[in-house]
Every structure is written in C-alpha cells, then in structure tokens.
Image 1: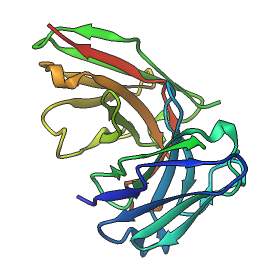
Image 2: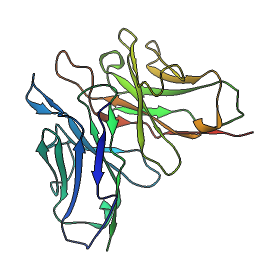
Image 3: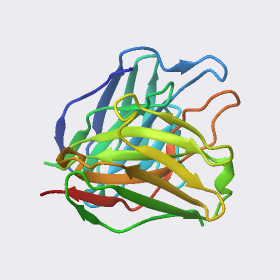
Length: 113
Length: 124
C-alpha cells in the first residue's frame, strides 16, 4: 500500500497569515497516461463529511476559494492557505488516488493562533 | 443537484448483522464509482472500497476484504454496506461518496460528493 504521511500533525496560524500543510507519499503518484499527480486534499469540519478541495495535486474543485492552493509532484505535496480565515479551522487530509487501496494521510488539525 | 443521503444511526450488539444504505440522486448512478469510507471515533479516514453500479465491479481494501460487503441496486440508485457479524471495533462513522470521473483505463479517483454519514455503534 502507498503510505501517506502528513506534517505537521497540528498547526496554529494567526488570522490572515499563511498556513502550509505537507504530504509525502511512499511512492510516486504521477500517472503517466495523463501526466497528472493523483493526489487530492480534503477539508473536514467537526460533525461534517469531508469536502474535496484540490484534485490532481493542484486543481481547485469548483467553488473552493482561491486562497486554497495545492502544489508538488511525484512524492511531495503541499496545501497552502494564503490568508487564513476563521472558517478554515478544520482537519485537512491528503489522499492518493493513484492505485488501490486508496490511502489517506493521518490528517492535520488547523487552528487559529 | 447531486445528493447522497445515508440511512440513520444504528445501535447493534456484537454478532448482529447490519446493512446501511446510501440513496443517490441528481446524476447517472450507473456511470460513476461509489465508495465507502470509515472514520473511527476521533480518528482519520479509511478507504474501504468502491463499486461501479453499472456492472457491479467491486474493489475492496485488503483491510476490509472479507469483513464487509459492498453492493448496489441500480433500480433504486442506492449503494449498500453490510456486515454479517458486527464487532465492537466496527463502531465508527461510515460515509458513502461518489468518485469523480477518472481518465480512461483508470479506476481510482477522488470523492467529489459525500453523504452525511451513518454512525454505527456496536456494544453489548
């Protein structure tokens, strides 16, 4: 199985500041047929299901604010929130969709400092 | 509007059977993979498996193979997750989710729409 490792496990950022979450996969998730990295990011707020933010490592899902961005390739990926808003408090997960079994990172808890 | 509506919370005893459902609407049920994700209390997300309702092709995570059964009834646009003999360790929130369209020749993809979750509690 591909192991997904996120860092840090928790993060406290001031409102309006940048938040950065990292995700590392144990093997490349670059799919040669479409030259895309099959890596997704989700946001989960308390009591809610996860919400897809980013797919193919850097493509924002429709309706997701542009302060959310994804980057990286191969095995190393980053989710960046450019200017933290109060409503961004949540747990964030990365997910590899390269091969089954699909696997998630352990999650990063983002709080307001 | 795409919607996935899951059945309500369940409280069961160890050894009992259970089948929970995920009723979908707003899209072509037979054209998208649909999957199940487990979230144990206070823990992260675990991919259990997916089914393609068009032909019932089903893929399981090795961690869940033989422990659960994923099925679908395309006549009523509903997917199911079932257990034949529950254990206390099955206590969790279970989410169904639709997988987005994937490149030709590929099965795996991200989940773009999610159900609200079904809480399953197994306790004697």
